[in-house]
Image (cartoon, rainbow, N blue to C red; front, side, top):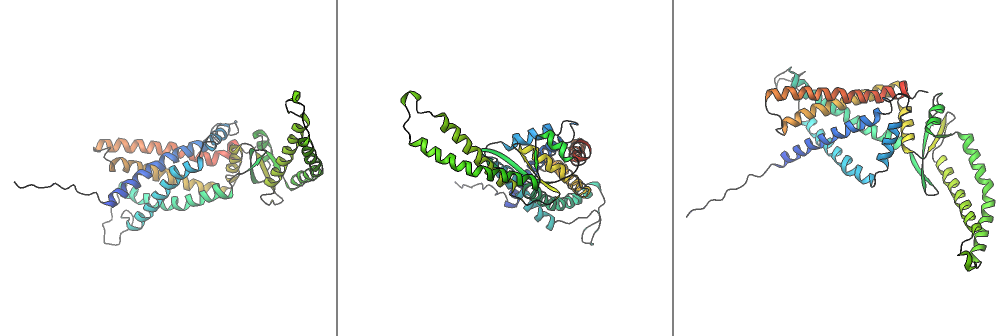
Length: 340
């Protein structure tokens, strides 16, 4: 009796990579919505000095294994989507605005959307790289521990509104003269700490009576003084970690979110930065939600023409809502909520 084997057709690798690219794009959109929602809290709650923004950022900052989570859930998916996106942008052709004759010129809405999906991808590629460099390296609060407790330091340019805003946030500001005073205070304590260390050695060599349980209040006080001196040393290291110009100060706080808020505030004092970030946000929300619509079609979640139309309206609505949050993050942070 003849037998025949039914062979399963193998799935092309490129099909798998494209589906993964689509999924990573959806993940990027989820992060974008969360990111703009968090940032909008610096501007939308008028008069609260970014209270919810600070607490949201501090909450996220204190998540265990945060660097690993950021790398696995953000870094790898976004880089994967970007790399395959560049490949698609280099290999695809727009036929909505110009044509070299090899393809028809089709000035339909979806052809224009296809073209703008590629244009905004280039804006996102450049903007995302610059955004990460600025916010994660150039203007990122850096940490120094004082007696085991983390404190964050950030260099800021002075403006008239910085003092009252920093005071309400509980952020201390140090200019070059204030840093010199801190260094002088450290120098005055160095001789005293030398004697404290000698006294600790002497006390440790003594035999404590059994009825005291081995506890010595003088030793306890000496160690507290020594820890306070070491904390001051760490504080000076933080203050001197960046060189300051005449119009700059070092901001210090135990709250990462407070300094991040001041960093965002400083960024959006510049009209140029506001315009550039507005273009970046507009490109991101269009790319994300137009991509969401094509994602739903690609994965067979919407099939009929009616569902296409309704879902397009839904995606446009989300696009404007999230876009509004992003624009408020830019124009409302300094010009409305945190100018003074």
